[in-house]
Length: 274
Image (cartoon, rainbow, N blue to C red):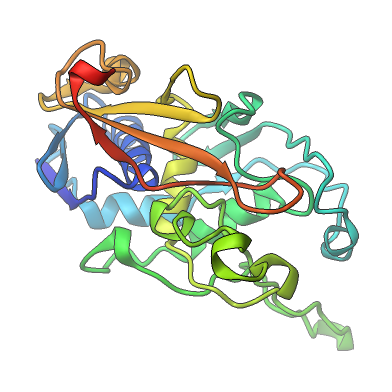
């Protein structure tokens, strides 16, 4: 069965979200292969019942292993945005099993301080609409999954809005407070996120990392053109196999504290310039 999703290869968030979808398909059904075409990403699997809808439904239903969350929502609000966020590894336990800890490579990490990676990831996953006709373009304000609990007369907490990781290049292009004229984080505005891009990029970066260039915080990735299994996808992303165009993007600072970053739109790079 073949699965196809419309993709903009100049959007690094969408590119690595494709890698995340390939990771998920292979772990759900085994033996999945993926490749890029001009404006889409394709996944091929021997599972007869495989579909993009089922793939996105599985991503929506991700569950993480339980752990003691040291910080409450109130604690998050009081944290200094300039502080370093030492996010512990996360483990997806259903419907697949996958440990996530790629952010130990701080060069591609985008968040810091008050951003709670665990809660952002779960909120983005829960917001996925598997039936959306263009999943990467699904946009909305994203909130935490839990609702206020009034059981036994207890007053529950209000549902908290969650900002994204800023993987999505569409958002990164207008994320800088210098460009916007003010900081959307400081004003706590309800801005739109692309939950499929944010959640699946978070998964895809575990195996598939962009290739560093000689310039700090600037990276390359390759949209390979031939069907390849998940086991060698990381080599294809680095341009070692599979051919395809090279794209270059920056993980640039978006706040004055130079802690929070965002993936900026990529530019196609001729092979002679690499």
